[in-house]
Image (tube, rainbow, N blue to C red; front, side, top):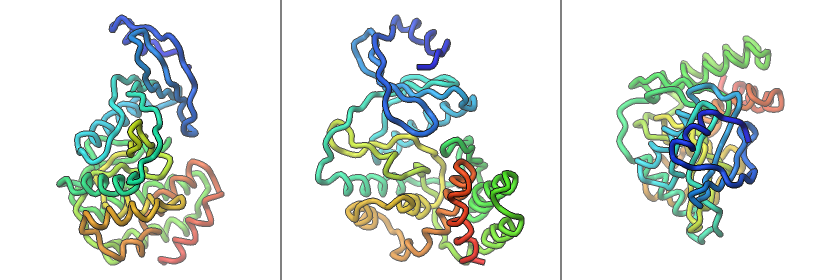
Length: 283
């Protein structure tokens, strides 16, 4: 466990101390622990030594925003610092038969909450990548400027894409109104794949590791398909509880171009072929 003076100061302010710590499997960026404090309770501690100063504040805010939306359970946030995030510990329970249906139903409820702007009040992070969330009323402009062009330029700077590829991203960005239907902004988890959905103690879904922003609901659905997809009950429940267009799957690659660019930037050339295939398909 990282030595965090801010965490120690918070514990002392609460007259608490750490009795034990157990490392947990987690993502490829942060370290995760189940810690037992002197109040007898277990907590989930997430730490990252090289986190940008606002990163855990943004994650805490995202969890709280998802919690307020009321669609799906998220861990309660107790405290955070620049390199630590202390949350409710939710031991895994056996999935209930209705797990996937409840996930789709809850996400639909979350997406139905009215939002007026694309973006968010502050930037958030998708993995180790900062997501610019400058607010605007135009979803096409937001996705073009703060998702596709932003990461396209980062990948060019890292010599992972060519200037020709960046020109293709620009052409796609200009054509977005012809490729994607108008959608009202919704509060998105932002990184919704199976690894970020847990089965809570009651066997029902819990969302973790958000990259919250307000964006197109179809973009969230597309992300669920990036690494194998969810079970049919999830999509059946979501479609039954929203007005999502029946052909949303036709646009999966366009939305996921953002996430593939992000993976290309973070993990290198193993994602280059997928990115370039999508760029060629749409230009």
